[in-house]
Structure formats: C-alpha cells, structure tokens
Image (tube, rainbow, N blue to C red; front, side, top):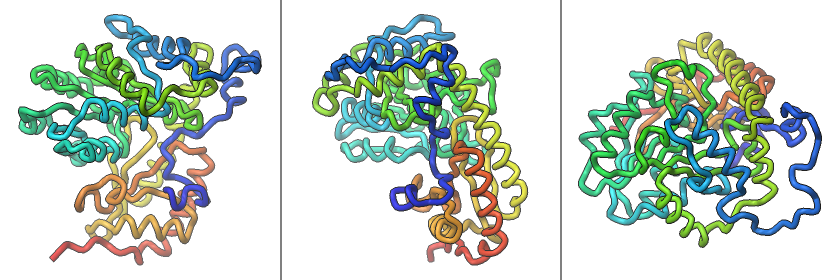
Length: 394
C-alpha cells in the first residue's frame, strides 16, 4: 500500500469507509447550523491531557448503551488513532518472558509488537471452513502459566467475521479464571451490516462482558470515515489500567490535537452519529452486494466467507485447485489495471498461511468499487491464466 495507494487508479485496498469532509459531517447533522467546531479565538494548547470532556463523555455514552452499568469518561484515554492505542496498551502491559495469544489472521501489529517486546506469541487461528470462527477448546490448550494477554480483533480485519457473543462469553470465562488481560481491537465496531442487534449472537463490546481486565481500542477511522483526524481511544472499566497507560503515555504522546478531538466529539454526538452510521452501513450493504455478484460470477476462480461486519473481505483465488501467488496476482493486477488490493500472505501471514488470499476493502465510494471490479473482470478474462500458482516446497 505504501508503494501504490497514492497512485492507484482504483484503491480497493483501503479499509476505511469512504472518507468525508467536515462539510459532509456538518451536513449530516440533525442541527444544520454551520458553526465552527472550535472557535477561532480558542488558544491551541495541549488541551485536556487524557482527552476532552466532550469526546470522552460521548464515548462513555456509547459504551454505556445497553450495558448493565454506566461508564465514566475517566475510563477512557484518547489517543492519536487506534494504532497508537494498541501500541500503548501492549508497550505498557507486555514484557519479555510473557506469553500472548493472538486471534489470527489479523492486523499484524497485534502480534508483531508483543513479539518485538520479547513476549512469546501463539497465533490462535480462525477456521475459514467454519466461517472464520475460533475454537475455544484450542484456546484452553494454549494457556500457559505465563499467559499475560489474549488479543482479539472483533469485527475482524481481514475476514470481516465476528466473534459471536457465545464465544466471547467463553473467552472471558477462560481469561477470568487465569487472571489474563483481554485486549480487544474493535476499530471496525459498530459497522455491522449483515447481523442485527436483536440476533442472540450479536457481539457486544468486550468491555461490557462483565470482566474488568478487558481493554478495548477504537477510532474514528474505519466505521466513522474520519481517518484524517487521527483520533482513537483506549477504554477499560478497570481505572488502574487506564492510569498506568496514561503514565506511560506521557513519554509517547502528550495529548491529541484539540482540533481533531473537537471534530471527533461532534461526529460521535447525538447530533451526527446516527446519520453517519446510517450512511456508512448502507454504503457497506450496497457495496457488499456488488462484490458478492462478482464473486458469484467468478466462482471458478475465487471463493470467500461473506463478511458479517467491518469493511474488508478475504477472498481466495485459485487455479486448477491450487492457490495463486497472491503477491504476484496483486502486483500484476495493479500494473495492468490500476486496481489495488492487499496480498494476504504478505500482509497477514506467517510462513505459508493465507496463500492465494487477497484482502478487498469494499467500503470505498461505490463508483470506485464498480469501476475497479469492471477492470478486474477484464483481467480475469484476459490475464488471469498467466498468474502463477503457489508451488509446494520440495
């Protein structure tokens, strides 16, 4: 993506819902008054170090919805994006000699950072033949005396799968028995496009599962279309964990821009959030239907587990029953058509895992997806036969 995302003609690797401007955000608001989000007379200091009261208050309200007990803004620490939030939690809580179990496949940061800190990392592999679900019995067998953390990504990047409520219940029970911290990266929450809150397996935020050693992270980038304001957060009902993260944060990020936080607070306010999520969930549904049609048309070459939530799909391309070289496939497609995808084995894999898989970010502007898939159709007809397959090692 570093090499191609600024020059690609059709970027279908992007994981954010189609970005919006400040004008777009204000036009979505129930109150259409166009007032500055931050008065121009405001002095731009460091601001409130742990995050503005308005933003943390709105976030606390979101986590309190349908929860048994309300959440305080003091249980939230604002960060410059979820990537910084994840890093701070891991850097603060994980040490050399610890053991970490990580949901897999997932965003590489979640297992590479603990490894870089000297922890032993075990990858808890989701099963593509079972709708990318996790096996709780496997988790039980992975627990060690030094297991410090279980890391989840729900909804999942790259598969678009969810961890259902019943599985979350079991994970929390196992963690509680061992006094193990759970880090749940929920950056794609609440973009649920193929499951409804009334479904008995609809996953609540892990923070509301009744265990105070659950830490969750989120941001405005993915579900809320505002990656450019670089605003995310850490939330935990155990304030001691928030406090220790805040202490370490003094040496990494003093605070988050007052301007960014003002925009974030407005986006998450009652004035904007419902219209914004309505827009993005409808975009996801529309675009997923378009991608579904493409997959069905090309079932001879590609297969998937249809995503339930989030903005990404993990699609496997094969020839004569063999997985294609996904890196060569993505490079060739980009070169010949200008369509950008992410190769699964390069971006999400260890060893030979996920050969033949590509990640598609389908929540771009609908026209971009349609035009990109039109180009891909031509490629499949004219050039796919020339894409190499993965050779088994001798």
